[in-house]
Length: 87
Image 1 (cartoon, rainbow, N blue to C red):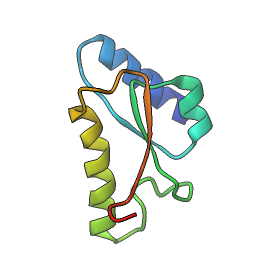
Image 2 (cartoon, rainbow, N blue to C red):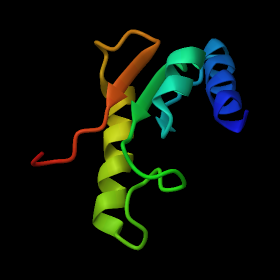
Image 3 (cartoon, rainbow, N blue to C red):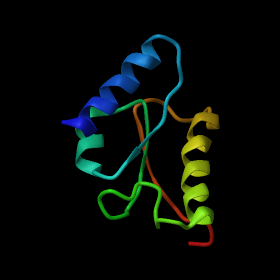
């Protein structure tokens, strides 16, 4: 339920003119709820930013999510797979 609520809140914020991006651990939830912009990450449940205590990897996830806000070619709803740098 919580995963769905985040996507629904993001959609409502977008209707109010506030751009959003979500980081999704569960692809099927993102496909069902269809938040405006979602970054799907292939990490274990509970680790949306990748490895604990690994600032570099966590920052890379956040930067990838924020790039979705900059990409003018994306048309909501957009679900993008996280691609680590160099991989």
